[in-house]
Length: 331
Image 1: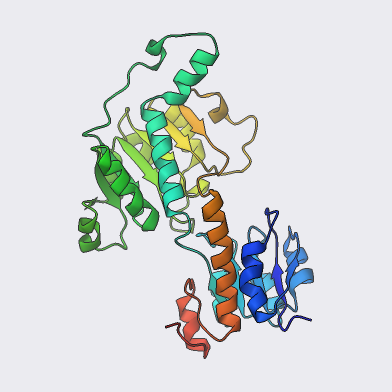
Image 2: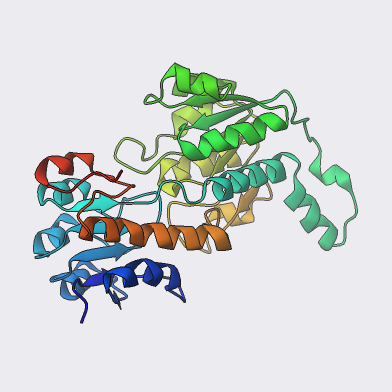
């Protein structure tokens, strides 16, 4: 019998080999569940020592019912499924994985940008529809010398900045938490949100979803963008006010969009975005590669193994919890 009970609250994976390789060293067998509601999580995890979470809601109500939980580790960079304040108050460590898909997401953002600007998808669909005519994509503007505005300047947009600069694109960014010295290391100019919207030929969104970032791009921002601008989102759908974006696209206030994420996923079949030739939509796939998925699963399990072994994890979300616990920092 396992010394600790570790529950995977929900999952979309067919295999758990990376997690098992990490946790087997501690004699831990995973308990796999498919929780959809708070009640499901409470029933399955009430006596768990650790949770590994994908999408199931880990609300304050859930956290207050957890009797033994020491750590909640989430598959991914974001952690909006977890009430961080409630976890901290109860002395529960929250972990995520901040660096598992830097190349995947930045590559995907660059692919959406290139496909939008060069109108690759439109041209492909036109040819397959029987029309051999590049003029359907007119106008296409040269990429070199244009300006890419990064909304957020964490690890992923920093990686994207280097890739965009290789194409001769100038990079600016809005992120009030990043010092000028860090931006300069990446040859990037920090600007206000208003200035980013006004100056950018392309905007790529890289913000976490929280009360401060939800719908941070809305009618006012679209009204100030260039008519030639494309917006790319590989972060979280609700960071953009989708209704405002649809209106801006319909009225020609911006040139197009490349979207890997939406406000509601999967997309509603009646969503107007599906009928727009200047919009590319992917099914929240930017994070994925075989290598990235294995890395994510291993590091998510390592967060759990660290805490259950008496250490703070490498990827600690709620740093204030350190005041409540006697865990050691990893060397």
